[in-house]
Length: 378
Image 1 (spheres, rainbow, N blue to C red):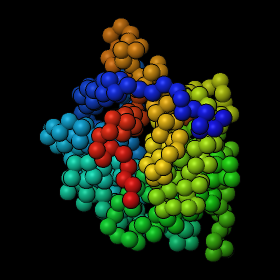
Image 2 (image 1 turned 45 degrees about the vertical axis):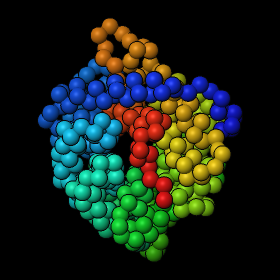
Image 3 (image 1 turned 180 degrees about the vertical axis):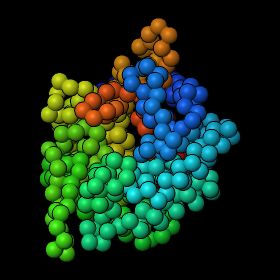
C-alpha cells in the first residue's frame, strides 16, 4: 500500500476540529487543578490518577507547550502567564545531562517565543540551544543521549531517535549559525546509525565501548521499524531535516512510505512484532505531524497532507479520546488516553499524558489553520 492509496478516506470537519480543541483546552484546567504541586506526567486510562513530577522529567516541556498553544489560540493573558511560569520552572533542568533537554526547551520555551512573542521564553530557548550545542561530542559526531532522564551508565555512548526532531528545531531556531551546523552533523550521524534503506528506523544505537579508534563504531539496537513511536519520531526528525533539501527529503518520503506500508490502519500497534499487544494512537499523531511538515516543505502536490488528515481523524474518532462520539456516564470529554507508556519495569499501559495531549492539540490546530501552529519552514 502506498500513500496515494489512502488519500480518499474521510477527514474531520471543522466543527469536529474546533469541538475537540475546546474539549482538550478545558481538560487542561481539570488536570492543572489535580497537579498543582508539579508537572503532570501520565494517568492510566480515564482514571484521573495522575503521576506528578516536580521537575517534569522529559514531559514538562509538553505541558508548558499546552499552555503556550492555548494562549496562542485564545489570546487570554492568564494562559500566557501560566506558560511563562512553567517555562521558568523548566529552566532548572538546563544543565541536566540529557539530549531530552531538546524536548523540554523546544516545546516549553521556543514555541512560546514563536507563538506568543515571549521574549523571556526566547532567552530560555537560546540558552538551552547553547548548552545542547556544548554537549556535541566531536569524536562521536553527535550529541549523545546523556546519563540523566533515563540515559543511564551508557548514556554518553548512546543515540536515541526520539529527540531528533525537537533537537533540529531548537538548534535551527537559534541565532547562532554554529548551532545549525551541529544540528546537521548530529542528524547525519543519527541517520547513518539508525535509518535503513527501506525507510525503517532503529529507535536507538550504541557506540562500541573502546578507546582506540578515533571514530568508534556505532551499532543499532533492536529491529528497525518495529516500535511504532520510534518510527514516528524518526519520521518527524527527517521531516524537520527536509528543509535542508536532499538527501533528507528523499529519506523522509521513504520513511513515510514505510509507515504506510507497515501500518495501513489508522491506529498502529505499539510494536509490529507484537501485533496482539497494545495499540499506540499517539504514534499515529507523531507520524501525522511528520507528514504535515513534509507536505509544507515540499510545497507541491503530494499525498502527505491527506494522509496526515486521515490519521488524525482516526485518532479523534477512536475510543481513545473521550467526547460526544463515545460518551460514557460521567466521563468528561477531552481525555486522550492513547499513549502507550511504560509505567513500571515490564509494564506498558495506555495512559493520558501531557505530551500526547499536546501533540493532538498541535495537529488539530494545524488542520484548523491557526497561524504559527505548524513547525517553521525556512
